[in-house]
Image (cartoon, rainbow, N blue to C red; front, side):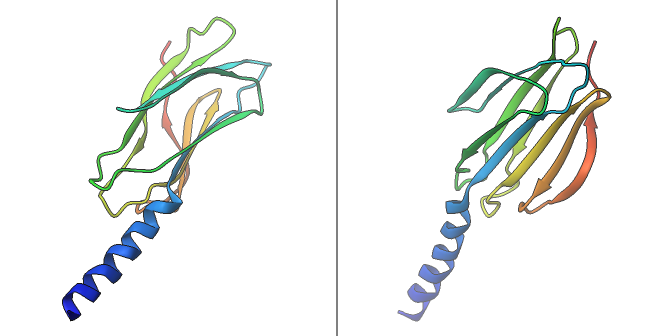
Length: 133
């Protein structure tokens, strides 16, 4: 009975971590009135396509799976001609214990930046990708 109580306690703490869920935020910080085209997808969901004006953002909330395999892929393109683009992994769950947190992506003139908050591998804002021409 004691083992069952310990199991239920640990399992409930684990599930509380998943209740908070995960979020992907994509912000248009481009200059010169450029629009940002975005589309993201996972195995079960599709977000967009959306067009974000400068200063606007898109926030998507979801619950990572308990197996630790949740991933979102995104494509961003710079307007007005949408020649500069990047395809990337916007969210990757590291384990079943990883509740996800906020993955905050910023599209800037020189590339795409990321700051992770509340995940097992939190980071400060840093450049991750360059634009592809």
